[in-house]
Length: 153
Ligand SMILES: [Zn+2]
Image (cartoon, rainbow, N blue to C red; front, side):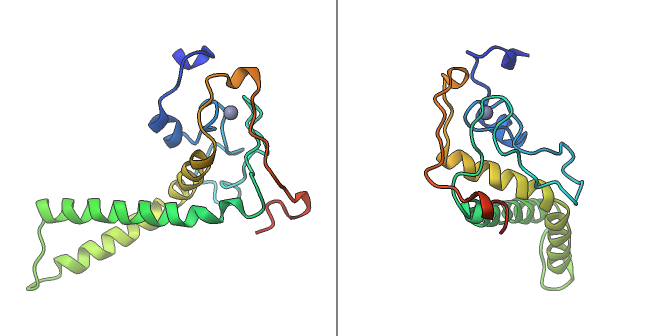
């Protein structure tokens, strides 16, 4: 793969979908590769295993993730709404609208683990950008951290 070379910039969308560090787009953010291992699928590395970027930028950093998660849920719902409208259609004379609501709700529940991970990845990418010199070590260190309260929220 071309991503083996340090001077090749991996694709942003692919690196987000694969939950890669936004700084080097190579290291995994999560310790567990299995998204549906529900006991520990959200456990993150303290630092990117490839470039050393700290992944917890400040106390409560990932609270902002809920806005990204909400936007993704609305986007998926809009996508299924128009897909349903174009293929099955809606009517007030039968239950097609309520069937769409049920199908969409089940889909969102099933997709929740990957959506939670991707939301964190996108949120982190808002604050940490790709660095062409990632292998040379211009790491963005967090301004303030509280080790005692890390992962305690
Ligand atoms: Zn990295």
